[in-house]
Image 1 (tube, rainbow, N blue to C red):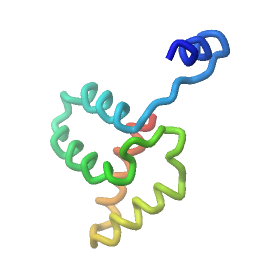
Image 2 (cartoon, rainbow, N blue to C red):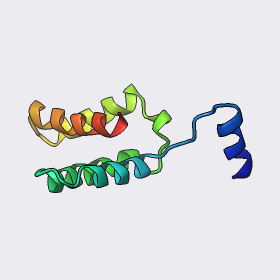
Image 3 (tube, one colour):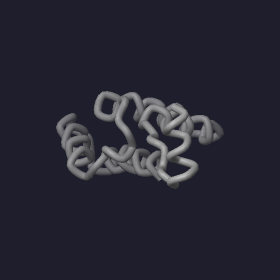
Length: 92
């Protein structure tokens, strides 16, 4: 841990951030939203795909698999886009 902190400070490396940590932070920051409950439901649906993944390992192919899985449930494109919008918001 000490070596990792040294690399971050001295070599300007970025720390590894994980999906779970990003979701918790995003939900805390957005708790005031009227749709916060819906966001939690969407995050729970995304969890099997993204749990314990570093944010740098989330790539287009994975997002395409998520999109295909959501469409396979028979949901409309608008519903799928709302889920992907939430995913983008967390990643930003």
